Length: 432
Ligand SMILES: *Cc1c(COP(=O)(O)O)cnc(C)c1O
Image 1 (cartoon, rainbow, N blue to C red):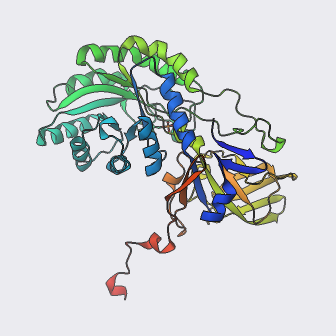
Image 2 (cartoon, protein in one colour):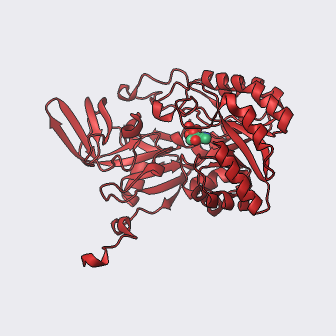
Image 3 (cartoon, rainbow, N blue to C red):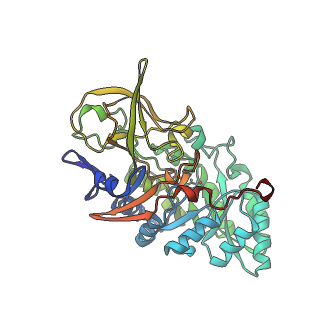
């Protein structure tokens, strides 16, 4: 569940109306609910309680310092994919010792920094990477904790741009090669084989792919435990969320949608996986990103114009693909709600941004309330892979980000100034 709801006609984040935030901070505006973040973390943490476990929030989904701090305060660890993310964890007051370092292209400098910070584990994606980690660790006279990312070759049945666990994908090392890789890695003196990892994809909305992957991994994991005394098995992230109809109950028909039939809850996930995992006697790591932050954030935007061309009704807004790229990149669906839900007719509409790309749209031919210029909309479920993927394309400054906690409001990222979009650029001296 999330804490975006209507009170009267006004869409609220927790105890604060989004209109009041628009008045103070302008648009486009990302707004996050702190209690939703904490609630999602705690739901998963509680569901996994029967086993020794650690939830490592995949902070690439949303790395705002306040989001990281909220989760650190809940006890979360972090799945990081760059030194930049590790520095953010430190800056936000999180614990490097609860960080797992993923990513296929770790540089020597990154490995060195992470080793010095004492990260929990490096999740390696290739043998040359293991060799490199060993070399850096030897130079620093340290022992590097490592796990290998296994590609279990299980289809996650999700969008091709977010599937990662088949041999068509660049991720991990093939299942069949893993025993040999661990045997060779065990001879590298500055490595400690601490665990094994998998991650099969993202926005997975049923338990079966997770179950299949875990089942396939079990005998291998047990062998690695016996031979190399590994301590943990990371089952990755990928838990899907509801993008459609999250505000369905008691809502007028124009935002009723078809989805929401089976929702993957942490409890269902745990109920199916724990009986498989428990007998291993290992620490279980999870790396949820979207599940924690996806429904904890919205992007609020202003309707600039409404334009009819032929049979089309275009609602042109001040947010664009540079602020939220998911529809253009993944054909992703974001529910669109008015900040004021006053009664009006339904109209099939395209909601689009002002960037010069035909891919710059938030929805096409969707039955929506008839919007008028001057009003505000919320693109729901924008808390994961939203702001973090924003760019200044078209010299559009990065949006502000707001954190809400009950009735408390904080600007957790200032709106970028236009001049800041060219900071660091110069005109070459010979051009002057
Ligand atoms: C992206 C990623 C995650 C998080 O994925 P979600 O779908 O957001 O849960 C977890 N682990 C790894 C290795 C990833 O690359």
